[in-house]
Length: 259
Length: 273
Figure 1: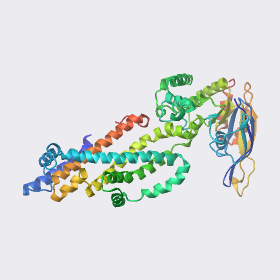
Figure 2: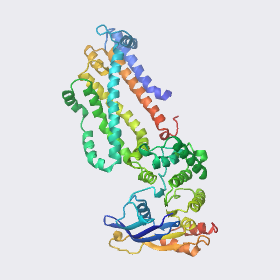
Figure 3: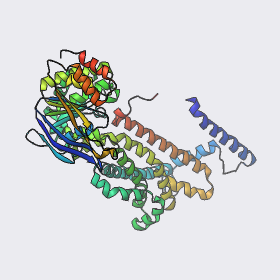
Figure 4: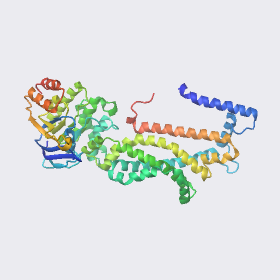
C-alpha cells in the first residue's frame, strides 16, 4: 500500500519544491502555482457562478464532457457487441466484414475529424461520432477475436443440447464475452478521453477539454492543473466502477476476490 | 437406444487420408470402445459421428435414417476438456439443458417449467454426487467433478447415443475408477448406445461390450499419408466373462502401447462387473 503510494509522493514533493522556489523568486509566477492557489481557483470554478453566464463552470464542463464520453463509448460498445459477436460467431459475416473492419481499424480517427465536422456540423453529433468511430473498430476486433477463441467443444456441446445460433449467442457467447467487453471498455476509455478533448479543443462552447484549451491563452496553470487532476479522478472512478460491474455481471470470471 | 450403421466411411484432409473403408454395425445398447495409436483418426471418427466434422465419403445411419451432419440432441457428447460452461454454476449448467430444449427465443424457461427443470437438475446432481457443489462455478470444481457434471448435463439431454472422447483422460487413476463405476451404472440404467474413444486399453476392455481397434493396414513409404486407418480388429466382449488377458495383450500390441502390464492389470483387477 505504502510502496504503491511512493511514486505519487515523489511527484507531489518534486512539484512542491519547484513551485516553492519559483514563487519565492516571483510571487506572481503563473507556471507552477501553489496548491492553495489551485484549490481556491478550483473552489471558485465549482461554487461561484460565472459572472457572464451565471453557470457553475466546473459542473457545466463536467456534465457536457461526461455526456459526450458516455454517449460515444456506449455507441461504440453496442457496435462492438453486435458486430463483434456476428463476426466472431457467424463465418459468413466474418468473411464479409472482417477485412473491412481490419482496414477501418488503422485509419487514424483524428484524421477523420475534419470530415465529421464538415459532414455533421460542429454540434454534439460530430464529437460523439468521433469518439465512437475512434474506439469502436478496435473493440469490434477484440470482441470478435474473443468469440473466435471460444473452444469449438463448447459450441458443439451446446448444439447437442438443442441450442440454435440465436439461443447460443444469448446463453453462451454473450455471457462469456461480457468480462472481455468490460475490459475492452476500460481500455477504450483512454483513447475516448483523447478524442473527446481533441474535439472539444477544436469546436465547443463548454467541456473540460474546451476549458483547458481556453485558459491556455492566459497561462492559467491554476485552472489547467486542477482540471487535469479532476479528469484523472473521473477516469479512475469510471475504471473502478467498470471493474465492480464486471464482478457483479460475471462473478465466474473472477474466482478469487482480490488481495 | 439407437443402432448405428457406418458404411464405407472415408475422411481426408486435402491429400492426407485419415480414415478409409470404415464399416461398423452396432446394435442399440452396445458400448463400443475405440482404441488405436495416437493420431490414427479415432477422435476424427467420433467427431464425424457427432457431426462436428463432415465425412468425405460413405454413409452413417443412426436409427433408421441417415445422420444429420451437424450436432443435434440425438447424440450427446462428453469431451476430455471444455465440456461444461464456465459461466454457469453446476446447477445452472444442468438447467441450461431444459432452457435450450424448450426455452423458445430467449433460450430460457420460466415459471412452472423452470421450477420443474430445477427439480430435475437437482435430482441429477444428487445422482452424480454433486449436490454439495450446486452453486459452484466449474473453475472451482476438480477435474473429476467437472467430468461428472459434464456427464450429468449430457444425460439430461436424453441422447439416443452417447459419445465420449477420452472422457477420463485427464483424471487421476483413483477418480477414474470412480467414474468407470458411475458410467457403468448410468449405461445399465439408460441402456443408450455408447461410443467411447480412449487411450487406456484397460478402460476399453473394462467398460466396453466391444473393442474396435483403428490402425492403418496399407502403407506407402513414399507418401505416408496416402492411406488412412480403418478398423483392424473387432472384438465382442461377453459382459459376464471378461476379456482374457491374451486378448488384451493382442489389442495392446496392435495399438503399440508401452503400458501393456497396466492394461492387463486394470482388466484383471475387476473380474466381475
